[in-house]
Length: 424
Image (cartoon, rainbow, N blue to C red; front, side, top):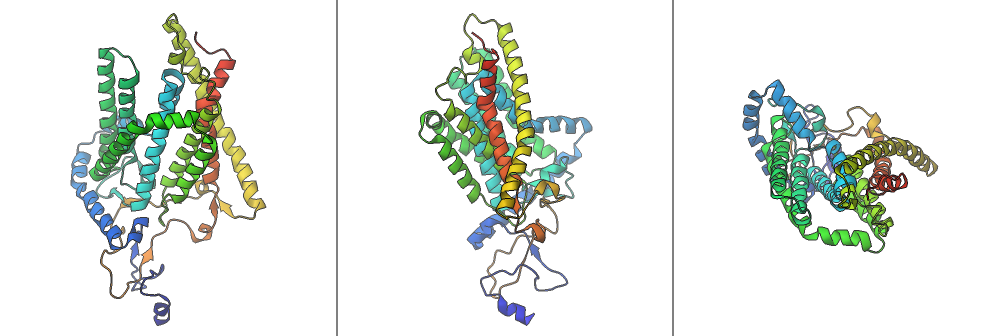
């Protein structure tokens, strides 16, 4: 042991054994710990806030019923990618194409900020036990802040403000829309508490971050859209900026699914940017059904064209994902083999991601600076034999989702016009 001690300087942290080989202390490190005492102190204070939410969650858990769980799972669905994807498609193809693409970029910002904050802080989900989670797959990402809470502020309320500024609805229409927006936002956040997958601190922090992003976006969305439609080198800029943001995205030792979700959403936004920049002059092609409808167009025609466009568009987006995923998997795999780079697929490795619920084994590194450096062991999620390999899923999903974004914003409208699915 003395020889090993000599190899560790006062400033470095060894990654294997702690003071005792029999009872090693393994700590969950986070990128923010690189700030030293300040970063570790922030994590400890936030962890205390998370654990303070355990008694309210226990009280909510006691009131659970089978019907309540089903209803809250339904409410939680309205904060997932599976719901937001058809929603953005519906808005883009049927209601207002500009609203659809701006909402897509706002969703991309929300996903990136939430994923970056999660990986920067590496803070756990609620304690299990005593909390029994109703969604096991939620524990593949860190807890604070809540993705659902951020998006439940960003997307519903941006739709509301956009409608107030750009839509000419009757008074009763705005009242109904406002009630739906309020229910959508509140129920999504409340469902995460009821299902036991987030603490109140996760929801509060996520809501605050969502409000900040939304306030900035409402001031800059028009400028952003003008730059997207009429700026120079939009395609090159979107590729460079997205890859740069992914490069600087925090990467913790205990890896979770957050980065994977961020890559997928970044791909979608790049595809939307490329599609809009490529067909800027074809404004009539890229209009939604209601934008193209004239005063003499009947509601039956609008409904019929909308239904056909939605059906055809959803099929195209799903086929794009299925087909291009296999194409890019083969092409990227071939390219990596040609340049002799070892790679692996994280989707084929069971329990690849770190399980993020809080337990007695979850330990943060100590705040105090030790006079004699204590040797700490890092908790890791990747097996040692793949730690130096490339995850092929990252470039494959980035390219695949970029194609899906292009198909949504551009491919479907072009095909519908060629088939005569337009209104006059």
